[in-house]
Length: 66
Image (cartoon, rainbow, N blue to C red; front, side):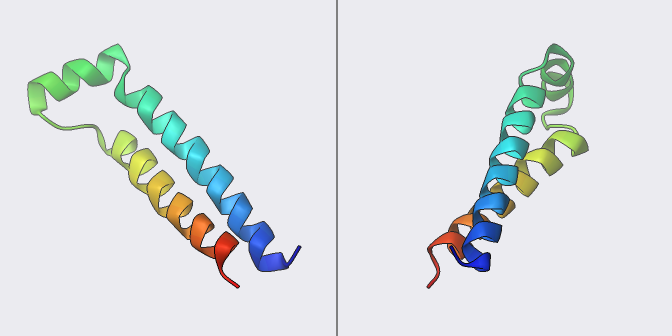
């Protein structure tokens, strides 16, 4: 395997882990109360979700790029 594909797969895995952590944080009771009162997620939860999505997409692109 080429080095770029390995890095892409690693980024994809890290992105999936961050998304998992973000979804767990978003469904926690404290976060749901905060979302009900303010109408938005906390900054930490947003960073998990956005970071996971960005790393996941970057990983997919790097893994399939020739």
